[in-house]
Image (cartoon, rainbow, N blue to C red):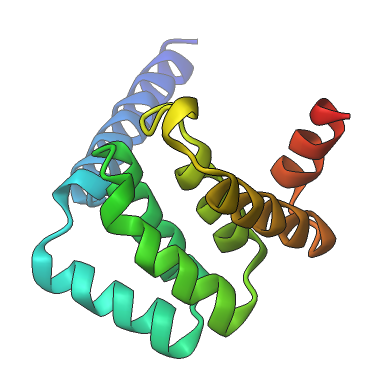
Length: 139
């Protein structure tokens, strides 16, 4: 019985020390916030999204601008991504930016309102769920 106890204790010590060793050698994953994107990285993401139609890059850029509430700066990129690559989320982003409360409902003229509605409709036709939900709420 004493030998079993000693062997169990040695086994537990070895097991514990190997677990601690593994925890120390594994690198911690770094979470990069869209707030931390450098200007150079942002330009690379913009090039990938607009020139190549890379939707992941576009979504990273969208997060960057939306977190900062810099909608007017992002509108041009959304228009380009929607019109050039027919990306459903970009169509919705154009609608969202043009109708966002930041602009105020009263300053949106009828032409801009009509344009934003066309982009919302196109986004829903391309299957973007938020656009579909928005249209369903309006009717």
